Length: 152
Image 1: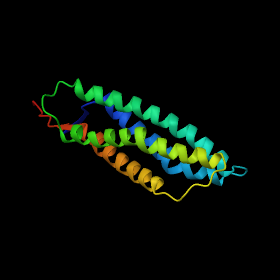
Image 2 (image 1 turned 90 degrees about the horizontal axis):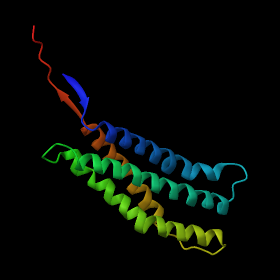
Image 3 (image 1 turned 180 degrees about the horizontal axis):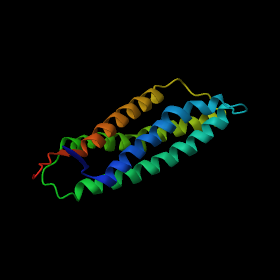
């Protein structure tokens, strides 16, 4: 058996995307508040900037992956191709609903306005976990095994 990459560019984008999300959403987001001298407003300002940039990078990865899949010579959709719809849907929800809502809350806190408790961060973390899991499965599915027969 020999393993090869069905979509090599998409594979690089998928696993790099996973790395970005894990590093920023699962590490930077909460660690910055533990740094000496970082106040809540300053941490929120940094977070707004970082998550805005991450969202733009995620769209670049998503578009490259989507174009790779759409312009593939394969006639039939695969499970990995279909599963990629979920991270795309999550990215749409985050871009047009969740990140703007979190950004508005952060700006209110930065301005000194009292903000009521919310589950938005829980939704965000849940979506990130689902996105990373789906991307991982999609990335693995883009590797294929082929039997190689010895002609001797």
